[in-house]
Image (cartoon, rainbow over all chains, first blue to last red; front, side, top):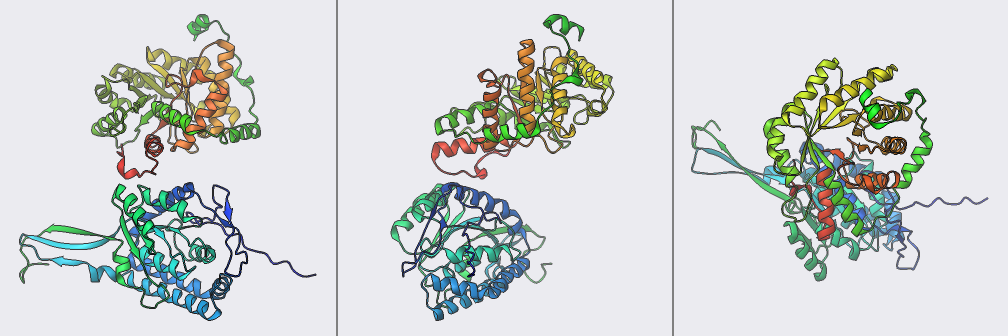
Length: 293
Length: 308
């Protein structure tokens, strides 16, 4: 008798768990050949709310971890992804990517994670500063994470765009709520499984699938979201982000990047989601060679 | 105890014969309260009602007069940027803080409740408990939250528990008496029912689930069992008793489920803060955030609400 293949139920990822959408709805995206990709959760605004609550809960622990530990965990994600390469390549092919391009995309994704893992304990050394002041103070500025970042991931790729936006955000100690690509959602949920088995605490990354037109508004108006990472160039969306982001002065960053390029990674994707804290520390002597600092 | 018997014309029953509770049945019934669909207008009304039923509480060893003053301010000014909000029902503090709290809320409708009788354990002689209670009342407490002697209850000394409650009730004078059963230590729902009956017949004005120091606290199963006891007591004697679930009700959803339960078990008469209270410290902010969400359409952040 021929064996019946067991198909995966694609669910969303909130607070380290894989619930179905609270709305109970789903949609059925198709690949360019017209084949069904699967029944995917059509998340609702309440899922956004739950995800933000989970992200806030995870924020304290994640942002206070040693930078080196965050680095280890990002590297761990890369290790896990390496082990499941074949699965991601298959999924990309199902979603209409060629065999060669799929392999390239997965490998670049792994390398990108390693790249940002390397930055975790270094970006502060490069970006922070000791500032000359004319009073008896040791004055220095250091980066701190912005908080909860809403990520609207690249609509035209399933894996590389998603990871290219998540990695720098969590490398900097933020937690995030991610809206996966609407047309190509498969890798997002499989990537959630990778995250879930990589020592990333529950709630640091939360991934939702569904309609952007429905989910962008509750995410960008949410008073507990501190920044938005938008990957794309639709002016309508950018306008909406700027408008609703003004409610609580969110940092809004829009990137029109081709994430498949090797150069689409740099330090500024991390520092865009950092706040600069300057400390004035009283000392006896003003600067100079005689200073004990 | 004798007085009350004469006054109200009812007999004290044998508490060993209190009804047994069907735990599975209670769980099924409670699950159904959680499936009610509450539409936005009713929800808004319910949220404001819940706010008005809160006993804003601080019961910690580290409480200072200023912490209490700050909480009293919050009790009267929940979120001033939004008009039309009620105040909470009361502030709940230790006896040593009653004087401070009373002075703060004197010109408002907010009442001062004080825990007493060697809260939270209740492990002190009766004389000490009575002095504790009288002190709180003299300092100006409008309500006394006493704890029952769980050790005595569990060893079957129901008369001891009954007499103790009756004695504290007498010491309360005009102050209303809430009797804390500490259901987390009573273990079974049968015991919760029995303790509720004892408390009500001994003169409680309110029965309250927990001190907030023991887990589990106010689960819906426990509250439901106590609400049924209140209903049966009301049927038998015609006397209305209040209910206060305390501890563990930290979000609006739970509060709304509780209100649904009160309405369906006891009816509208209990839906005021004279007869129903929430003992909570973090519930108020969550309810405020829900109200603001309903009003503005935007999910809120705790960053924009006072801590206490």
